[in-house]
Amino acid sequence: MATPTPSEASWAFATVALHAGQEPDATTGAVVPPIYQVSTFKQDGVGGLRGGYEYARSANPTRTALQECLAALDGGVAAFAFASGLAAEDTVIRALCRPGDHLLLPDDAYGGTVRLAHQVAARWGLEVDAAPVGDPSAVAAALRPGQTRLVWLETPSNPFLRIGDIAALADLAHRAGALLVVDSTFASPYLQRPLALGADVVVHSTTKYLGGHSDVVGGAVVVADEELAARLAFHHNAMGAVAGPFDSWLVLRGVKTLAVRMDRHCANARRVVDALLAHPAVSRVHYPGLPDHPGHAVAAAQMRDFGGMVSFQLAAGEDHAVAMVGATRLFTLAESLGGVESLIEHPARMTHASVAGTAHAVPGDLVRLSVGLEDAEDLVADLEAALG
Picture 1 (cartoon, rainbow, N blue to C red):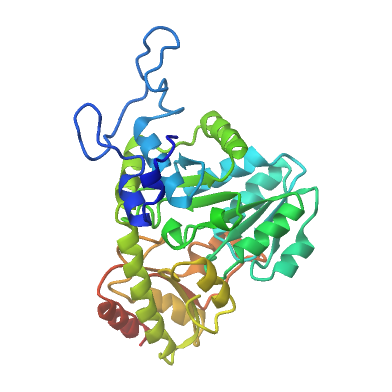
Picture 2 (picture 1 turned 90 degrees about the horizontal axis):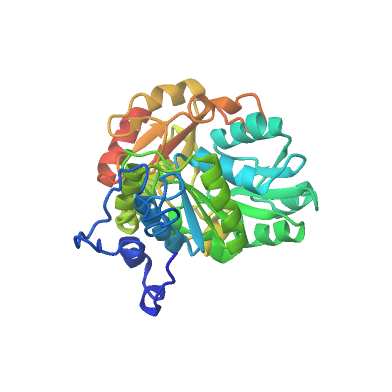
């Protein structure tokens, strides 16, 4: 990765998002990085690589541009773009762990992550436990010094929007000889930079806020250390679940508007939360921007704003929740999140169905919202009509 010039080091987030890794094309002057839709590259004699490119699994100029941008946004030494968020997670686990190691998950986590850990990595010989991310003392008690290799954190978490203290958990992990991995998908690099708080690895589903338009599937890993970068780079190539050039281009296009989109997501979410708090059908709202949220103080300290994700529970129970998510018009009933359009889902039967009956199961009365960029009053009216 090119060393930033002094001017680049002083750029604000929105400027970095528009320019990092995205110099005008040297041949044509094109201001947008080209899509190098190519699988292999001509060599000038055996080993005579142009720009280090030989085969597109190992490196592709469009993916390189995205990776340089993502590393700059998260303040890392290197980033790696993957075919999906779960491909990124799988590569982190297999690159940094070996059979017999211990992985500590959060007790509130994306169902796909839990499934990957318990049904794939555990069969490979990894021991897996969970602890509440909002309670550092519980995390400390669950650590196995010398055996715990990774402490995995989602903050805000999926689907309860729980908050983990990144700096405190990084300190606990490091004292136990472990690394802290932070899934920062719900926050995006605009709202939260875990590496600056002591985390070792950041994971994103670029499908979500980074891509931002519900038109691409991808994942990313950003690391703070050159040695970790070398290990991830080897496995990125050896395992091969890399982002294709067109997917990389789509994410890079989405990143350009990340700052302005996140500001609107956050503002709309606050308005939606106010409406939900006032509605008699809603028994509880989960949103870290609320002063009575257990993680509010930590979130206020480590995040720029509180994000566009909201979860809430309905007093009438699961049947009402299922009926309600099917009754909205602007909120589209769909899995995923972070796109410009608002989405609604029933976690127990959708994104977290794979963890039903386990310690990670979520209650049937829970509804999750990804608040989009529509007019906030239209979104509130849509929710109120569906709740009624």
